[in-house]
Image (tube, rainbow, N blue to C red):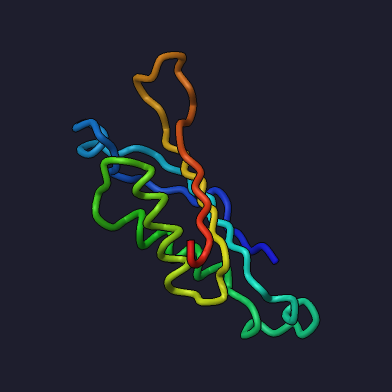
Length: 120
């Protein structure tokens, strides 16, 4: 089963360029995890699944933690935290969108997507 939180928004101070780290940028993050929670679909018991609020907390904790130069590093830290913290997570995918300024073509967002599996 896939459990997800999409479009978590925050102001972050991640980036290679000094103005990104000083002034901050808008970010949107999606986190999706694959878990074995089929029993929750029958039982209606929160204890048999992974509460999506826990996923949002991981994103918030990592995103507001130490500044990273690369969104790739931010993505890796988020998926690693989800896998390390919750043994039922078999796979985690994160998408990070960063508000782009000063990029040729004036894109609204730039970003990365990373998927990691347990024991990979």
